[in-house]
Image 1 (cartoon, one colour):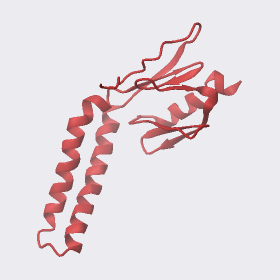
Image 2 (cartoon, one colour):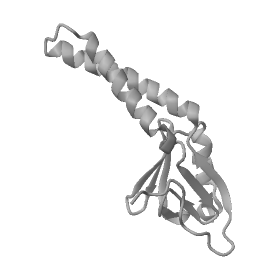
Image 3 (cartoon, rainbow, N blue to C red):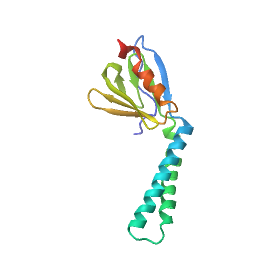
Image 4 (cartoon, rainbow, N blue to C red):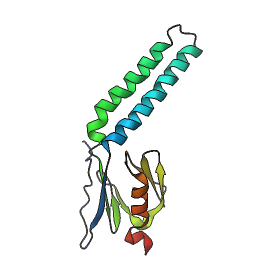
Amino acid sequence: MMMSLTPTAKLRDGETVLASCRGDRMTYWREMAWLAAIAMVLGMVVLWLIGNPHVWTGGVGGLAAIMIRALYLATDDLKVRWDLTDQRLLGPGDRDIALRDISIVRPFLSAVQIVTANGDKHLIKYQADRDAVVTAIQQAPARTT
């Protein structure tokens, strides 16, 4: 069974959505370009370390691997939606996090990492303005009361 890319939890009586977060296309492709560059360098270094005379093929392989992955996953990664309400953070599928249970909200590369009091970790990926998302979650009414 495929997981829904948007929240499936129903809003409670009186609950309102304050903001919705989807991945940003340009941020996604910029991050994939950085991953491809890193994979190219690592592939070339590994081939050089094992004495392969065709070190350049590591760069081609690293680029191909990341770009195929990026093209294959782009449509799904960019459809993922998180909803911030005045009571909860609702994520893809059945992710339902009460704002009072969030212990850490911090930026991580182009994402926002959420850590709950139970230690559960979630990523809101490919955000164009991750700091604004962090601020919105930190200042949500249920967290400030």
